[in-house]
Image (cartoon, rainbow over all chains, first blue to last red; front, side, top):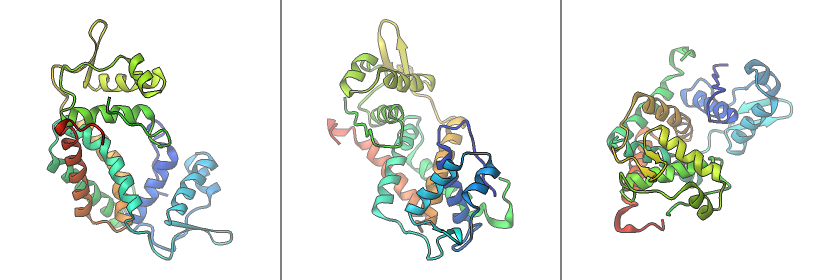
Length: 135
Length: 135
């Protein structure tokens, strides 16, 4: 796995893990139908608690990114990814608010913030290319 | 105060409070040199723990947004706001990564994400205008 966790971060581990699995899907490294490791084996690989991996999988399952089968195990939803829902847009706006406030106070312009968003989006899209999973 | 907290949110209360104080500065509702309520009085107003308010103030003080004087109390830094540091840009990129990944997976385009950032930035800038502190 190409997952890298920051145990010192304020972001909960299960959120970091879920975000990195999403980044894997966004970059094309993980595709619909691809199997993911079992909770037990991923927890052992990453040296984290079973419940933490389970929570990340549950969150992604609830939103429709994963399917969990008793026999086939955990797979990236083979029926495709959920779209841009109103609930997602609300959540995104909400999360952006704190960042945008600090950016504005520090004197970052609206266009600079938008450009940073574009650049992060690009990075995520491209991180799966060439099979370079180290960065 | 125009602070509104969501006690059900996954975002820690002190972070919500710090973000809303920053939004107050970004909108011009709070200006350099303006006094803030004491920890005790703000905690009582909001019905939250003293330590939570203290943590929000400490975080903002550490970054240079506030000053805490023994006599004058807590004030928005009268010497002006900190700028766009490399550390801030790193933190911002890091926080944007999870959102950008989910946006990309859901099929939101790079430009749609950038436009959402612009719109949230606008909202924050304008929320202080006309003295409307209810929204």
